[in-house]
Amino acid sequence: MGKHFDDAAGKAKEAYGKAAGERGKEAEGKADQAKADAKDKADRAKDKAKDASEKAKNVFKR
Image 1: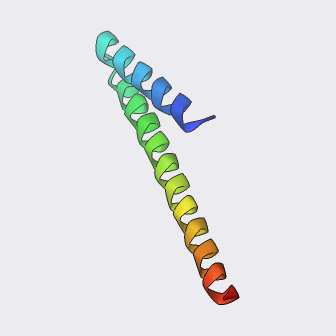
Image 2: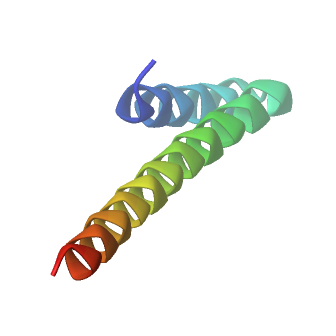
């Protein structure tokens, strides 16, 4: 599933858990949000590494 879906689902689970008094569901929601954040950061790092690789290739082509 996409990172945006994970974040939205996590927020919904957390809200449900708070409203229903279910700490486990609330914690699951927070975990889903953290997972979405980690995916986002990994994607950003991957993009930066790819950009750096392309720049390095261009330097050596000159």
